[in-house]
Image: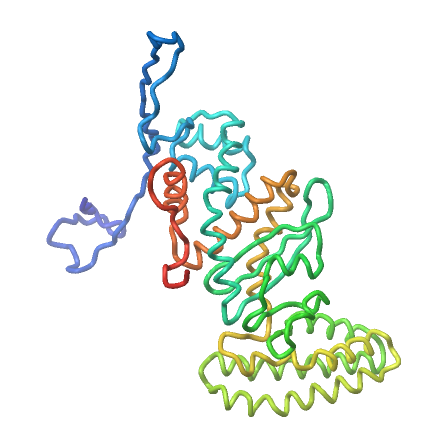
Length: 378
């Protein structure tokens, strides 16, 4: 639709087609959503056997779900709960207001275990791919499960993420996340991760800066060492950012980082002999884990922080604050698997509502379950 202006807003002179500036027009778009549900009725005949007298009902056609909600509606429900963090009652209200669909809270709740079952094969494939990934990031955060303290673990990379809820924060729980240790693994300095080969274990320098800043807040030489550590950290990140910007190749980065490493080690030796326990602890820790500070210098895809892992787990922290945790194993499966799906779908450029619709369709139709990763990665 083309709209002409009839009068100049400045001098009130008449305007028509002859005053149009050639090639100059502003496009204004209006998008509207038509939210009308499609209801399909299936009349199933009831029979009474003339031989035995027992009654039976005709079966549903192939591919028709035995539920009141169709595959796409169940996909939307799953997204509203898992990605938008809505309660079942809020989902009930949202469906009624947006689509005119009226489902009970129980019917909405029953979608979640079906979703957890449906996505499991795809998430198992993601977990296997992450074990073999050349670089990956691990992190964990507190969780509440069955009214007890638990932990939500994640391993992630550019291809996706795999989440796992466990009652423990120990090596056994870490082993469930990564049953085999391959490639460079980025973590914080939690002792559980010490089983990783030091030369393939990249510690997070962002975490280290927090400890260095804590020294700055001390008095005397402890504060001076903290300031010197932060300056050394700044120098390290300056070289790294130049490498990421393409100003340095890997050999040049390693060469420019050599004096930075020398300075770091000298500061760590001084700190390790300090009379303040916090300063001494940091110095000794740096010397003990020295090899794990620098894998990013030698491996493609590795970086000096675990920011990717922390960003990946952050939405789950917000979910914990809204839902209070999980109350049964089925709920834990739903949370862990759906968080895995959400992150991986985003990494792979997969339209989540369409993919989940395919998952629900495959539960009742003779068709393969959709995978999240390209077949070449499986």
